[in-house]
Amino acid sequence: MADPSNKVSPNFALDFYRPMWDALLANANNEEQIFDNLVQMWTVEYNQRVELWNERQEAQRLVVDEAERERLDLEKKKLKMNDFKDKVEVGNVIIPRPSQYALLKLKFFKFIELWYFSPDGCRDTAKSSISTMEDTFGISKVDDILTMRPVTALKQSRNVVNDCDLSVSDFFRAKNSFLVHIEHASWPKKHINTLAEFFWHLENHPICNCRHGDMVMLLYTHCVHRSWHDDLKRGTAFNISKLNDSLMNAFNEEVMDQ
Image (tube, rainbow, N blue to C red; front, side, top):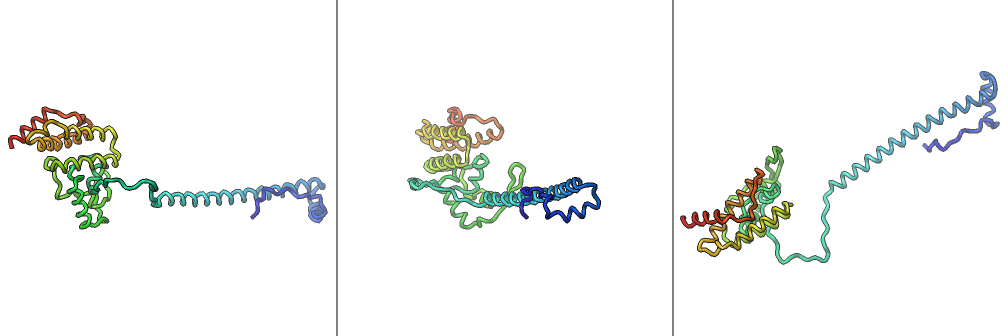
């Protein structure tokens, strides 16, 4: 159907319409009334055709718009691969990947043992991922909402080691990996920086030069780091980067008494 809005009223005075005029004269007073009636009838039909045309055009537009919305929705849901930098090569160090359990803890800003970021912890993850089906899911509760997550993200490792029981070398490697991953997990910059200062002050604290200094430093880390996270939940957290020498000495005495 062509657009009827472009049509104009015909010239009813032409001889082509004379038979119609003659037929209408029987019920009309004069030719002027016949002309007015013909124009009026044509106008009514014209308006009906235009209205019908507009309704069909609107319906067609809605169908097209809906199809376009569906296409855009599908485009948004489609998996996309991120780009890469052509001139950048792999770095000199590859940070080992910790378990899904550890990464999930970081995602929700929860305490997690540094062991998960140590070489032993990452090796444990690699072994467990071979023996555990990646597509096995379990139910977890976050903010009173039940969600389905991979079982590997819900289970704590049976081999986990407390921070105070790590070797010093594993501790330092683990904390470096930990700092990288909390940045990847979008922790606030303020928290990342204060944790980096915390570890730096521990590494350079005079207690490390004592006989059992490493054990004292690790015990301090274990207790203070966990306490800091507990206080963060309550909204009463202290500045963890400011070491408490009195507390450090108390831990030193505890280690000496063992």
